[in-house]
Image (cartoon, rainbow, N blue to C red; front, side):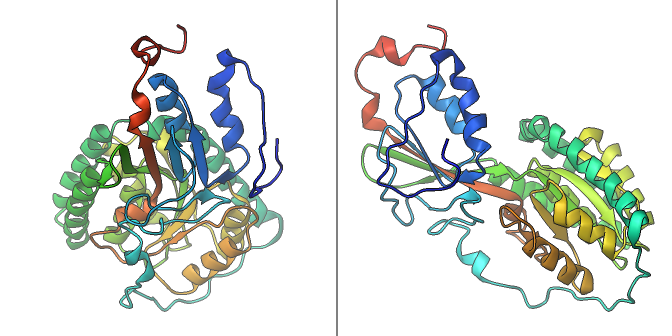
Length: 351
């Protein structure tokens, strides 16, 4: 197969057996690229499987794969082919804005941990990442209703904590639940006659949630809950001084019914261990709920990684907070191609 992304005109042909079609998405996804994918078929099961499994930003069914229109087919890739959000989409403008009120905290530099001790500590966290990556597919395929039920129980327990941070966390969770209900519904665009265009949101992967030593329970709860609601698995990484809040948050999350396979809390990690983790871990992004040196270090570590550009999700909480924890996928279907042999259209993969 092609070792890198090549823009044509080039026709690249790969033969495969019909009974091995289900293996193709994994092969395509393993390239790391994910800009545009097209499929021509009258078998609905084939279209549904490929549209679901292929990790590309733009999917075209029974039509050409060029000529995206602003406001109708938001354009942008994922992985090595883009960072999101999609140009011409409903979330594009908000990503060009930055809330200057983003909280920055003053901090004392932590005592550095170096050498074998740092690599041993980071090694444990890297093991957690591998386990969370294996659990990702199962959790992202979990119905949104179950995720919402878990979030509702978490909101209730936070609201009953009789603590100001618990009450604030509960209020944030109310907003997150509403955002998740909206995110679960595809956005339909008005376009040319004979074409259906929708925007769907998909989980990113494993999200690393960094907890600052001065992190507040409400902010930390919001970032972890948002990642889980979006279908991501989560590794909580506290700085020295934040271990107790990380353990408390982990208990709240598990007591609410979120599966143990979807979240892990590692021990406190300093600057060196965190750098090793972010620099080499199999993750899809990093979230942090406070600024300061930790955010700056995380941003530098992400920028120095090989491979796809990963986001630092350090936005202030708001009405568009949850959408950052998703990838965007546009599906454009030529509905006029559905005519013809009705028996053929109704075939399954085994017919």
